[in-house]
Amino acid sequence: MVIIACLGNPGRKYSRNRHNAGFIIGEHIAREHGISLGQKMFSAVCGQGRIGDRDVLLIAPQSYMNDSGTAVQKALNFYKSDPGDMIVIHDEIELPFGEFRLKFGGGHKGHNGLRSIIASIGTADFHRLRFGVGRPGNPEMGVADYVLSDFSCEEILKMGDIMPDVSAAVASLVEKAPA
Image (cartoon, rainbow, N blue to C red):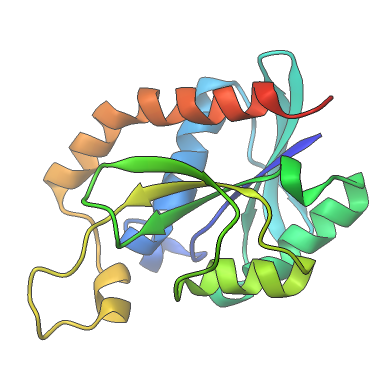
């Protein structure tokens, strides 16, 4: 079972926030692959399905970003999955809006969701899909306020255009995970 952890904050209030890029991408992947995100397990909203010929579990932790590691650890333990086969999808301020990169391992660089996962599972050795949200345009705006602000309508539309490429990148990682 390949676990795909999509990071964000629960609730309507946060649904269009930059910090919820992981949730937004996860919902797209679920729709594209016919995975229903209706199950509640591991302190997360989950959906099981297949991407290609691999079984996957999409999880969206519902304990807020700063405690994402709890849900991830529960899912990894339940399925006895190796963290090295897991994919975490998250927002990234170091990338311009709309750019995305795949990465394996590394630190958290101040991202509280990653910090929580690393602390909970005891390793930083897992795959990441970093989705660029850019930095605040206003130098007086703090990073926390920026990532908790909503994407613009134009950004949401552009995300829709980018999603097939993002989804294909995740699918390629899933296919490479050991069976």
